[in-house]
Image (tube, rainbow, N blue to C red; front, side, top):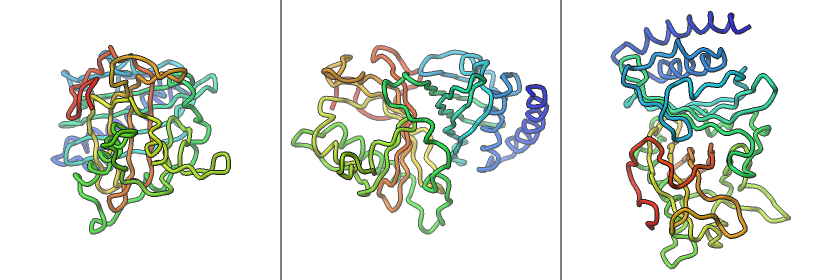
Length: 305
């Protein structure tokens, strides 16, 4: 079976590489490059992936080679959606990989493509337990329409409005429980899903849990968001990807009698008319002292506000 996968991969690679060499690599072209990566992963053969000689690759924040982002038991992709920014040559994919032993892996792959070659590859990969109890991957079957529908151009939020909506979330996160708190721009029924586990937009103990409720109640007071980046913003889909670090404002420590707070997170915000409609996150625990391999674009450092 792996031999057939490799043969099929060669055909996909040839098609994708030819299109990616053109002056403009559009959505279909960039998606083919992501196809190449994922087909190589499940074929357990990284050789066909078109890497630049100066590519930067990280796996859960650690710099390394493509072999460190692959694993031998990866067998098939059973859930997937993509976003792209064709003007920048950026892609990001969320996927669930079924492994040969029937276990499942949550995966985020971000790629930057220039002249048909991958110049940046960032992987966040989680197995059960890698983000404490944030895990319900079996719920990820059908992909939400919020993540796949093309928005007519006249109805699209701008690049910066998408980022502004996501920024409203991080501001609420960092100021909750303080006099400076300002609510995030979220709909009342916004779903937040973290490694498959839905945490908001549902009824729990007879009460409807909104995405703003935890901030309104100051439940995340004392936490910090730092090393913030917006590497892929997809105006057609209305989705902004933020990659951030979670930590504590006073440095590396755990919440009292609670789960770890130090994490590396890829958070996708689906935005409609300036309001966050859905949030999907892939996250792993990562010690505050560990680097991510990437320079932050915005935001206070650890310990800031």
